[in-house]
Image (cartoon, rainbow, N blue to C red; front, side, top):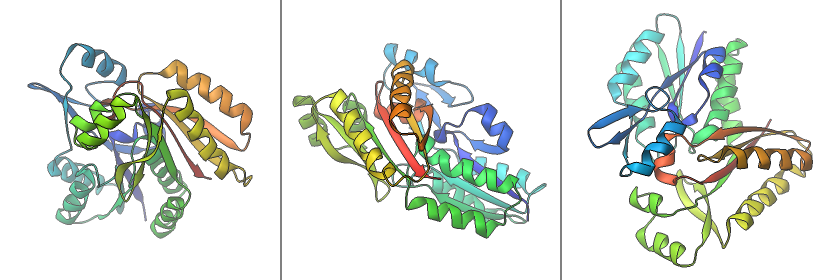
Length: 279
């Protein structure tokens, strides 16, 4: 059985890597007034962070079911099955769009997969599925591995400015107000598919240190891990953090990714995240 792998733009997998591993991508969009930009297609992360300095914060939009239907119909010319991996269904209807489209398209088996997370941590599932599909692994084996990954895959992130999450409806006004008043840098994570506070920490430096402690707790087992540092327009800081962590944790393989326009709209510039999964 020949299996295609589809994801959405919020996995932020670089175009070269998508092409190399034959990963198909459906974009989400950001909307500035009357202008709509498909992320990773019409707008790059660096352009987005420049634009939001001069404009109102945009709204975001999930792909239409029609976009999924068109892609799945095209893929059935060459594939028997599709694994469609998407950002958490608790924060977006993208996954449900893949489910609906899969029910509408005949002639190809569509298996939607709710990553229950986002950004390049969602991308870990995508990369694993694509590598296994390229190696000719059976559909059941690939899905079994994705479910196995859920047990060790986790991520924490620190938001520099809570107003973005509050305006986007991802955090309550009360939580945002309290956090702003106390200058709290909350550590957030995904729980039951939603973004929720994990711990409240007073400074950026302490918040990042706490995330490292959480990774160290898992990595002390000695098992090999894959980890990603994710930044919202803080590439230099991400590089420095990566160099520091590589010296501390030789059993962890680190990469750097970014929060692009859609996730960046909700988290805001300056946010930092760290996610990891057992290899």
